Image (cartoon, rainbow, N blue to C red; front, side, top):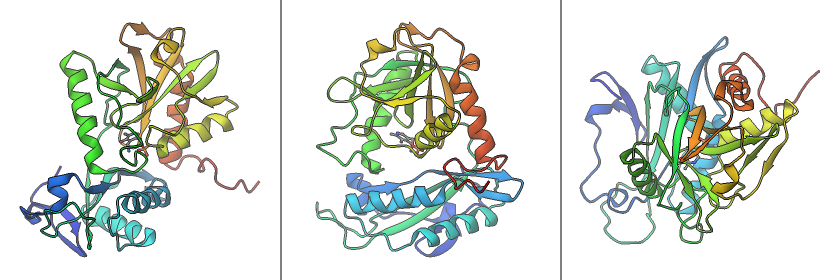
Length: 298
Ligand code: PMP
């Protein structure tokens, strides 16, 4: 992720990443009481462009508010810091990781009075790779939305993601697919899920998922292409008879799904709607086409 030359933004300063540290009594470290975002920048004909910074940093603010963690940077400032950091580190195609946390020594369970911010960047290939994934239904459910604000990207929620993902890999699968507390398919540890049947796409609705920015982008791209997308609750058995499936996320981008346990999808990913949408997504993020949902001027 970093070398001795890598620069990170930590509490108002651009510093050597390897020299930055967090204290032993930092509240966030003990309780997972922190918030993060994940953005990508792409090399485009117009130079380096961060994809949907407004959406990501608004969600960052929402997440901090949801857990009462102070964040003293505006969306515009966060965007500017990110671009500056990419420039300093000489990165164009890169992943950007803002983290809001509480570094103040505090072992209580009270909301932090002050917040800290770091932003780190690194070169990251497609997080789940390029090959179609073999998923398995996880024995771990997504966190109950009545227990935690599930639509917030809270660091602590990712203990659930880590254990689900490692459990799936331990059984020889590529990744986990998690159900919600009612037994409906929710999402992967770090990506949303779609399946295709009879030329239509289906994806779980808001409720027990992180409403991914990539998910929203794919829904927009699909609808613009005349593909019907339905948000609905469904159980894993409903995947029988599906022709294809894929996962979406900033880090994962759009990646095909070959199977979920013993359910093998009919078509190879390359022949599914998902593959076409993956191409449209790449064209969009790399500036070959205009933003989905952007005002059409002609
Ligand atoms: N679900 C979870 C649990 C995630 O961590 C992510 C990654 N942020 C996503 C979905 C996809 O969200 P996005 O498309 O905004 O990256």
